[in-house]
View (tube, rainbow, N blue to C red):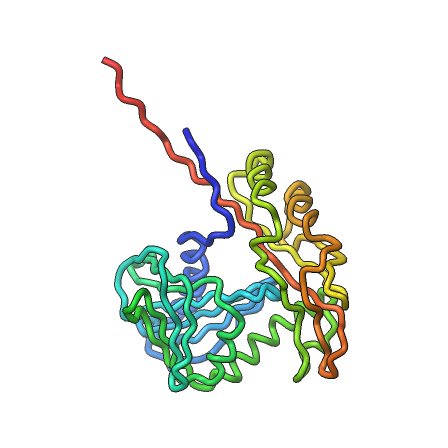
Length: 287
């Protein structure tokens, strides 16, 4: 039996669980057509914006871990039917014609419907959505789904408020979320914070096949990390040590700013995910 470990990659099962929970809410009522509406779902260390109505019509999900500077965009019941592997794609916004490129894929849910998604989307997606009437997701050069998003600006404001409220509760200065302020900005990708050798060692010694944990860090007014702790409940101490050790007391951010430009305390998050895959190697039968 052999095993391999993937770092920082969301698998199809995670998407199925996320969209499956959305479908449970969406289809829990009698199957009658209803006008599309916006809704924000708030959970610890998770904010999710939904645009849905008729269960058979295209639906949109945008979700994030507050402070991660990363978003996922899902479109369900779009034009595409059938799975598609991870590959280049884009988000298209009308009428501005703004475009965001990234990695996309499509999965088929247990009920046969297709969900297309883009992961690791930059915060600019919120500004583009706020001014758009429609959003489309392409896989390669083909449109996988298009959703009408009227009044998106108010919905985006609610999603931003969800993130800001949680970050403030974790210790971030509220002034950075006022007009003219800004949160801390990572000076390099979070994927580069923890050496791969440490993750390989963690995978070998943790005793767990899979690790999926979110951490929050306090960012001082000079941009250095002064505190690091797990947000995910029951995170093993070995995982916390591996994740937090390499980042503590390092200047990994440009600091948060209040509307006057003064540096203030910020809070950010990062995610560690190890997915170990096992395969069975069958030996030829002996004669």
